[in-house]
Length: 391
Image 1 (cartoon, one colour):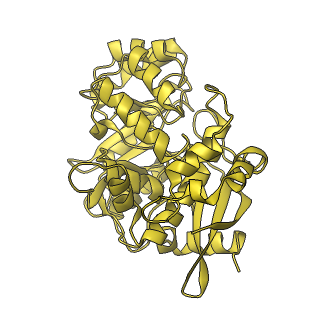
Image 2 (cartoon, rainbow, N blue to C red):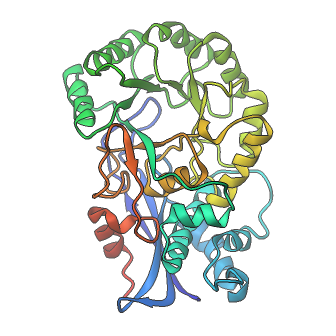
C-alpha cells in the first residue's frame, strides 16, 4: 500500500455564534485527503481528516513542514509489517521528526488533522470501523463499546437571542434523543447567566442534566464568584472557569466548588495533561477531562495522555472529548472513555455523527462502516468530495 497524493483545503466555518471569548464568524477549518494506490469500487481509497472547531486552519504548517516529511518517508517505514497497511502510529513518528519538545499549539492541530485522515484510510483498508481498529491496534483489554453516552453542546450567545429561543433550542435537543445538554456562560453578567441556567433547567425533564462552559473567560475572582453562585443548580459540570494553562486557578476553584469541574480541550499534549493533573487540583472521583484527539497530535498522543492519567490515578471513564466528531466518538468507544461531546445544531457539516445513527436516551451506537464514518453523513461526504476531489 502506498500514499500517492495528499490534498489540502481550507474551509470557512462562517458561523454567527459566539462563546464568552470568541465569535466564529472568521473561523476556518483544515481538510486533508490522503489518497492511496488501493482501488475500491473503481476509485482510489481515500482517508479524510479535518480540524476540530474552535481553532483556525493549519494550511501553512501542513504544507511547509508536516506533509513534506510524510512524502519524504520511505514507503516501508509507514506500513504495518504484518498487514502491509498504512500504520498511522509510524506515520506520526515520521511527521514529527526534527520537531522540538514543547510549544504544543497549532502544529498539534495540524498533525491531528492528518492523523484523522490516516486512521480513516487505514481502517478502510483493513475493512474495519475505526473504533475496532483502534481497539485492536493498541491492544486494549475487553471489547470496544458498542454505544457511547453523548451530550448536546449549544446554548451559544447569538445576536438578539432571548430566553425563549434558548429554551426552544434545548427542547430541540431533547426531541433528538439527548438527555444532557451544555450552554455557554461568561459572555453576559452573572445575573443574566443565572437566568439562562434557570431557563434551561425549567425545560429539562427529571433525570436530564445541564453543564455550563465559561471557555476560560474568567480571572480567579470571577471564577470563584460563579463557583459560589452555581452549586444550588446541581450542574453536570462547570467547564473551563479559568485560562486552560492556569493550573493554580483551577486548583483554587476546585477547593471552593463542590460539584464537578471540566477542562482540557485546550491542552494539546501528554506533557500538558501531566501538568494539569499534577497542579490543577482536579479530583479523579468527579471531574472531567476533555482532551480532544483531533487537536492534540491525534490518537498516538491521546494514548500517551491516557497512560499519564493512569499514572496519576485517573480512569479513562473520566474523559469526555471535546469536538463532537465521529473520530472522537470512535476514540471514546475504543478506549472506554466516559462519553463524547456532540454539536447537533452548530458547526455543520463537520460536527455531529452519522445520519443513520440516532441518539436514543442520550446514547449513540457506533457505525460498522469501515473507516471513521465520514461518508455516513451525507452533507459532510458531499463537502469532502467537492473540496478535495480524488478523480
